[in-house]
Length: 115
Image (cartoon, rainbow, N blue to C red; front, top):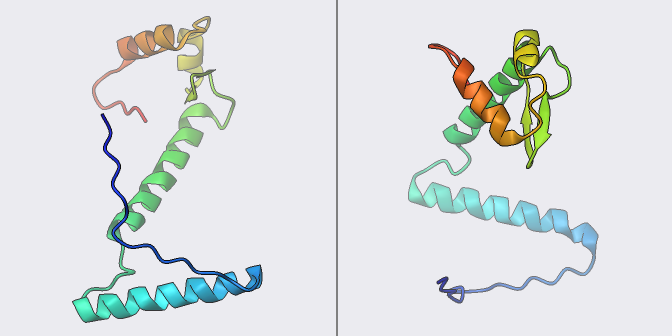
């Protein structure tokens, strides 16, 4: 059962025009910087964001190297499966996600990566 709580406080900001939205972003970025300064932290130093960007770049490079930049072997249930030519041949004919994953799990060797 989910329990919903009312927010502790709500601020409604009415803008005269959509063009004023940029001013609001600047206002709240400045408020974040000031609050971070008072707390003695850099509110914009986000090591996890940098790590996530590096990881994403690695995954994109890995996918291009292993898939030859081609089309996915299978797209099912929102999941895309890519592979090199050897995997394409080994997994050919598998049209269901469950069968594809079972076939892939049987091909995993020490040092392989799944993403």
